[in-house]
Length: 172
Image 1: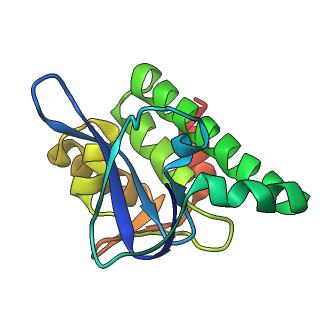
Image 2: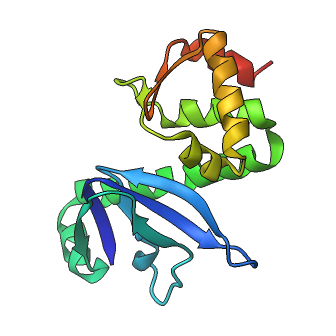
């Protein structure tokens, strides 16, 4: 099945060889998960669970196929969503293997920020889990970014104050 999140947040994770859950992503309202269902006989590579109260719309891919044939806009929208997922996963791989802790946090903040809102609703623990860092390390980095006036830390929210400084930080 393919799911569209109508309300709330979900955590996407995998289990490592030691049985520890490794968070891959946190998805929220308007995002889709379960796209691997579009490929017949595919194995679900991740597990998803709710972080808070969640409402989703579930649909079997087979039910969408006839609509996709009738609506090029729907097909394009689905393809764009899948392309965005591929691009995002590529950025996660790059961030994981080539960035230091400061670059990881800066890239994450820039990835999560949308065009209209410069507020990101993640806890330090959630960010740490997503980046493979400790919560203490994430807190230290965020405090340094706040000291440099790149961000403002609020309860469970990070406000981007100067995205250009964060971006420049990545391209030093």
